[in-house]
Image (tube, rainbow over all chains, first blue to last red; front, side, top):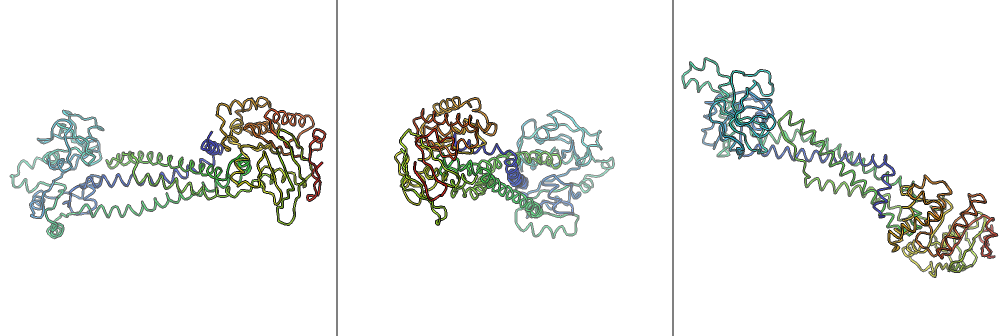
Length: 398
Length: 222
């Protein structure tokens, strides 16, 4: 038998008190840990998707909406812009390259995006099966789309109008799956890619066949262009160029910073609540150890008569506090994983975002060590009394 | 051997309890008899090294307790002494058998866990509570608790066993049985037995006894 065993038995013999302290600590640690995990993964995904996109050209409206809709595909677009006007911006000497995007339909909630091969190339996405689309109405599926929809190369499907709704189905236009991308943990995983002509084709009317090529070009619209600048002057000059048009350019880095700041207030509040719960749990451990010492003073005095030194008893009480804290911390880390799993399911369903990485973060190790240390400290303070315990008085004071 | 010589003790620095000089040979048995307020428990605590005398010397098992540090006293108590308290104290979260393993754990006596288990079960069986070895102390009757605490006082082969009011709450039959058990088990272990009590029923049993008088400062050795 070891001291650890006695400490464990002492904790188990008071299940309600032990459970209350452990659950409080688990909730505190769990909330902080969940926020760390969610924040880290969202930041990583945001950064991964923003990769080398300096500016987004799109219809006037909320710049943040423009970024969320066209970089992350989690919001509705601000509108359409003229292809000819967009081409003109892409040819601007301050612009190095542009990726055109056109969309307005979905399949089971997954967006069908018209673009060119520079879009998958930008995220270094490789094919796992089949080929890249070549002709109109041929599509290549993102990895998640293929997994969740069950579609495979050679399959056909119909798209639905809008970005989430599946009611208004275009049954006269058949899409054919020609390839599937490998998982890249980028936004491509959740998209169905095709060429822009497909998107125009889905919504084309009979009147288009009567237009000349020039008139047709002038009438074409796209949703946005992801731009890479050649020169920092692009950021200063483009907004002026677009002043009199229905277009705008938004800077993803700035908009995401703004978004983080807005989220930050809520996150800071949640973090403060979590820290408060943790502080309560430490107070609970303090009270629990103090209370146990009072209730068990005869037991502790008895152990002294059997050769237990003050240091041994101090160690025993510290072990009880330590085991309680450690239990709470481990439970907290489990709680945060369960929380993240639930959150991930909700976010994935709503925003097509994946937060499934349940690995331990380095900051969580600090959190666990810190919480265990403070838990030990909360036990150490009342346990200090054992060092000065008068055994004779305690045993006579019956 | 126990040798108490000219010992006095004061709780408040004003009033002093003076104790008679007496001794007890190794393996012997001695009764310390006195009414309430005569300092019986104080004397017991002094002999166990839980209190330090203001004056005089106490030698237990050849060791002068006055010359020992607190840590040495803790070790000595754990290794050499077994104490049966008037009230049966136990660590309530542990089973009876685990409670009996405590003296060994705390005093770090080199007894193998196999030998310890064998001795524990033997002692509990002899004392009639072997069937309660896996029970929690609270599930034992008062009599069973007392027997288990006698077993705990003997389990680590102490050289001296102190019993504080072992018969105070017992009728004549139970008193006879408990005292007999204590005497038999300490004799089996070759340990010295010191019984501290106010129970005059035990007077006739012990020729070797110290009677403490009602005035705390005047004590007589019979």
